[in-house]
Amino acid sequence: MTEKKRRNPKQARAQATVNAVLEAAFQILEQDGEARLTTNLIAERAGVSIGTLYQYFEDREAILAAMGQRQAEATRERITNIILESPETSSMRAIVKAIMSGIAGSPTTRIALSDALFRTRGESVLSEQHAMFFDSLSGRREFGFEMTKETAFVLTHAVICLLRSAAAEPELKLAPDALEDELVLLMDSYLAAKAAQAYPSAG
Image (cartoon, rainbow, N blue to C red; front, top):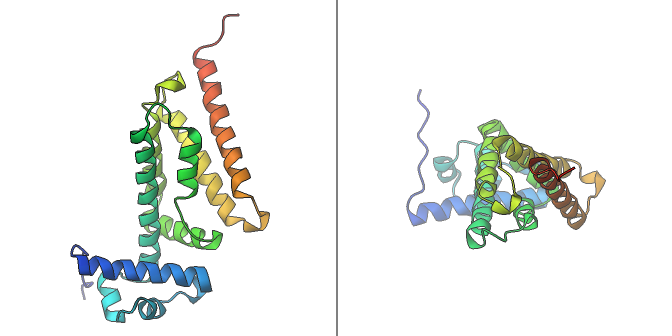
């Protein structure tokens, strides 16, 4: 028996249904946690039938992954806008803020969305984030050195993986503002070291 093809929400009404499902799932995650998240409860909260929900999503995992994907895309768009609006003065802090605020919700919600995205998309998730970050940094002349893929890889994975670890360890009670300062320091220090390496002062 072939699997029923999922509908592609191109029309406004269909998109509104998808939005309602994703918003309902987010609310349940925030209020009750992942253990209580079921497709029946999501459909009830969204005000749609379970049959309608399954027209767009195969299961709960697909809903979680779609939520994670939507927030990842919002992060990429936010960083792109930062670079386009002020390419010469966009600060590293603005980019860090965009990444930190890219996934909404409590630490447990962020981990649930991130894990689902990794389970369904695999390592391509990090590759996409790396490509986004590389594109946003590669044209920055003020760095004073060539932004190679290797350098961007270190910067990308350092920030993303550290934030993922922070969300996975809520017991550490890391202060968001202080963590932001540390990440900016990490990135700025690394970039400064790269610039010094490219243009060492005369001995």
